[in-house]
Amino acid sequence: MSKLNENNDSPVHDPALAGLDDEDVTISPSERFRRKIFKMVSVGVVDVFINQFYDVLSTSMLIVNLAITILNTYSSVREQYGYIFDAVELVTVIFFAVDYALRIYTAKCLYPTRSHPKAVIRYIFSFTGIIDFLSFFPYFMPMFFPAGAAVFKMFRVARILRLFRINAYYDSLNVITEVLLRKRQQLMSSIFIILVMMLASSLCMYSIENPVQPEVFSNAFSGIWWSVSTLLTVGYGDIYPITTAGKAMGIIIAFLGVGIVAIPTGIISAGFVEQYSKLQSIGNGEEEDVHFIKIELKNNDKWVGKRVTDLALPQGMIIAVIQRGEETMIPRGNVRLKPGDQLIIGADSIKGDKPVYLKEITIRGSHRWNGQMLRDLDISRQTFIIMIKRGDKTIIPKGDFVFHEHDNVILYSKVKDKVSDDEKTEKI
Image 1 (cartoon, one colour):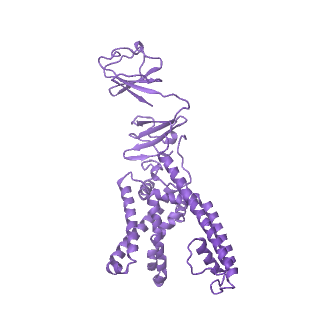
Image 2: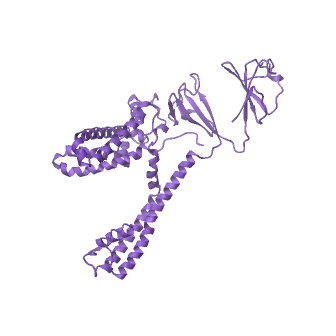
Image 3: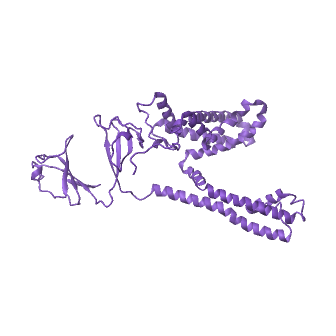
């Protein structure tokens, strides 16, 4: 288990895990504002209402825009409600443009290891940046170039790319992207094999069929069209061989086509199975033997005001989670601790260690320890009194400590034994 989480050069895909501390006294107000905007426009950050509202609004705008795009293809509906569709589409496109501007403004938070200009360039030319840009810019092209309005209408076909924005709003759909990226080398190899087979079969079929039906297999492209429709099992029937040799080759190519198409299909299917198995193993994996405790920092604690990197934590121990009010953070080294922070501290278990038990005993009036000194108690050598809670006080006892009624005694034991009704045992 690593001691601290450090930044890397990859984009911050999950801002909730980025450890962004908006209250850090070392950052400027403008940078603090930038981080708040970044959390708002980032998908899945719902620690405050405005962030959750922005996610819902973004998804709604996308769905409305796509619905209007589809309805505009019906002439009867467009004639009756066209002016409403135009107004709503303008509003949604303006929202996409503002969203794009906000993402450029917060690009430094997406790529924290880069300077702001380089982070902006990295986002603009990324796949998501291009999709975000094409989701609104084609709409305004006729306004910028009125003389070529008719020509630029073709660019509005890019609106279909807005569908890719849905992939950003739902983590489960990101599996598609992950599979294609992980299997890209295998997919490129299978595509290369398909292209070679298409070219070879088209040239062979052209050589066989051109003397018999020159008007059908008039050139190499005609053979390519036949090979594509055959290898991909489409079979339009507008072009086909009539010679015996051509038919025999067509049968062979058709059989090969089934196997060739199955190659990328099998690669993608295997990728989906691997990815979903990986996600399932993460979500439903076996329990790890890691121990966690939860503490709350007080005003006079030595950790208050310190960064996570400045804490002298033992090897194998981490601060796993910081709960600050309603916000939950996975801390990075630059997070500064504050009074009231609730820390979830985790530690690796020792290999081969035996279970350890804590026993909490409440001293009642009739308890045999009531009024006794610690040194006079007859307890097992494998049991140790480590703490006494008396009201709001926590006491580390010494030999002359005298137990009182209502004291809560915490015992450490290496063996689990039977306890009375006023005792509570918890395994850690």
